[in-house]
Picture (tube, one colour):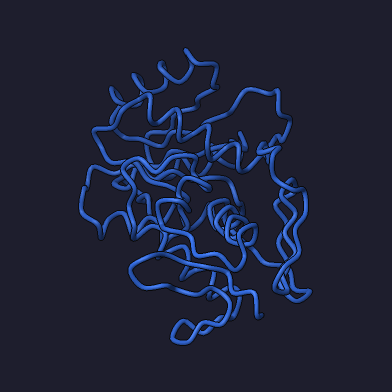
Length: 235
């Protein structure tokens, strides 16, 4: 991934609906993005290796390799931000995408303007553009470097997705404070519009696993029922 703040964003859109892919690509390109389109999972996998995109838009239902499998393959070798695009509106389908390593999701039919905003948001997190944040924070055994997106816990390096890093950074910057789900989404995504509470829950679950935090009796990432989450200072 090219981390230069001035280079145009390169987007890979894996979508078998040619009309939707063409219209979306034209809209994004009219706003200065470079878009490569793949029609199925196999093409998408090859294109991702060749172009090294900054953001991947990934349809869930694809011929050949489906979106879930491609998401897992991409995540095994890269932390590229992945936005899952699905026609399914059910909560289960959204959770599946997040469980497989996606950073965000969009449900068809979607607003092209909102899609552009979300692409820019995940790319800012990946490129470390939030200049108001401290470059490095150390708290509760964590060391987080916002520009390189490097995370360590008690001296062990963590492998985090873009969204997981942003979420952990938001909690670390507010250690000891309880943050509502909506506030966490604003800090991580840049907006709480159409907030999907379960997305935060899934990412918190992933973070607990990677931090070795017991999900039944967490000592680091605390759940405040009916309110939100906090990073506990006593650790």
